Image (cartoon, rainbow, N blue to C red; front, side, top):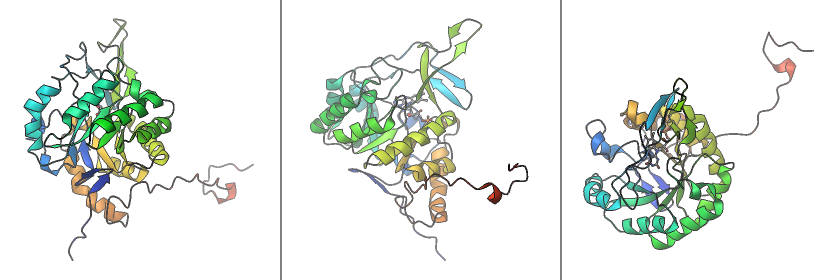
Length: 325
Ligand SMILES: Cc1cc2nc3c(=O)[nH]c(=O)nc-3n(C[C@H](O)[C@H](O)[C@H](O)COP(=O)(O)O)c2cc1C
């Protein structure tokens, strides 16, 4: 008997991907560095490191610190600027035949719009991701924490650029649903979340913060429950698709995000310590989808039954240790 054919393609607004497994911005370099370890052509999408209008040196060291089940970083958007990206990195990325979603960060509204407009129409650019969620630069999260500014920014980019737009959200807000709805109202094709969780590490002997920038963004397995919760809440608050990011390091993690409401995922920190993780997830994904009785990614997205459980009556609980008064 031949194996069932599973449809792995996903439609994220105007953006179509061959499969839902992407690599997250800032954790995969410009892909060239990973070519010896990963069959890049199999990826559903590649997000290069966020680019800015001008070159930026990033923050003072230390810029990364290992933590329990994760890491803190305060890289600070170190990059050579958009023109260097277009000249030095985009031709290689465009030649991979994989959707390239270019992550951009502006210092203000107009800069975001200009960055997106500059990418419009360039060969190989499939979409633009608006990094409105970087905790490591001043004003990095302004547009990701204020719903009004967020909606205006996405709308401004949408009117200046014909590429599909992904709005990347920060978990460092009171209501992820509110900011998700603002990005949707502005015209985002889809949302990606989460960026890192603001945190810090302390060297108590020196009485100094470990990171040069004092605070940084926590990522890795430690943040997976926060990311799952945010994806669950956001995906139920909007009708545009959501991309899940945060601590994904295995097929099980990926499946949890899809069932919780993500239409696709991005792998971040795991690329550093297990660079083949995206390939392993892709290898196992068809069988995992079949195990749920489905034939496509779309059929399992958001199928979590999150109805509150009934309170079990004491006499129905099979627990010898339970004392029923
Ligand atoms: C060292 C490092 C650099 C990052 N740089 C960027 C970046 O340039 N742009 C961006 O949108 N996110 C950046 N991120 C955030 C990741 O893309 C991702 O949203 C976050 O780490 C959560 O996913 P993870 O737990 O799988 O790493 C960076 C993360 C790390 C660890």
